[in-house]
Length: 282
Image (cartoon, rainbow, N blue to C red; front, side, top):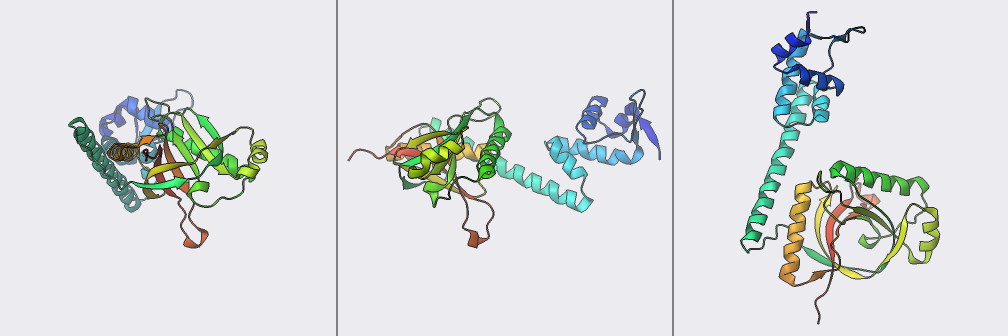
């Protein structure tokens, strides 16, 4: 097999040596051989095609982890994966366009409610909670997995029915690359067992939440809303509150995850975004 140094391979693939070193370090496009003494990289001629595919995927904005996954697939599967990725990009672009329209209308004195907002009554509840500052969507998901894993590990909490018994997350602030929340994960527990259950989870804080009303938007199974959709839902809830003349009890946005009934065969929980509020006087 023909081999070439990194400079020649860079010329043929149109990727810079700097990019090739990065892709090697990330495990995306390792060289065919690395000299154990000099560390000199050499590439095979059959790697030019994959390298050009990497370059094209990066032009599409595909993250390196996804690029690596695509390169590991057979051509037909890789094509399906790229199509699926791009479909997601177009969906996200459409959501961002909707959010831009909402913001433009708000600045011009108009209100836009993009999602149907419903209300429900929530009873007083005892909650076991864990609160932390996290960065970015990846950090938020990792924190959620940690919380759920902690609950499953000890299996000490009794099941509770309905939305009032479902675990939920409160976004007390934005979670982006610029803002770190904080987030608070909560699990309702029976009032009469709250103190005993709290003793099993010293990492968690026990608190009582008073009865209240909630305005909510159901986003369906999975709850894997993008940050843009999250912001769009928040704007819809905000506009609804202004239209209804109701005041939120606090500034937290809640994501509630309701596990599907076993008989349905569904695997993903139903998710909604909610804001607690007090009813207007009278």
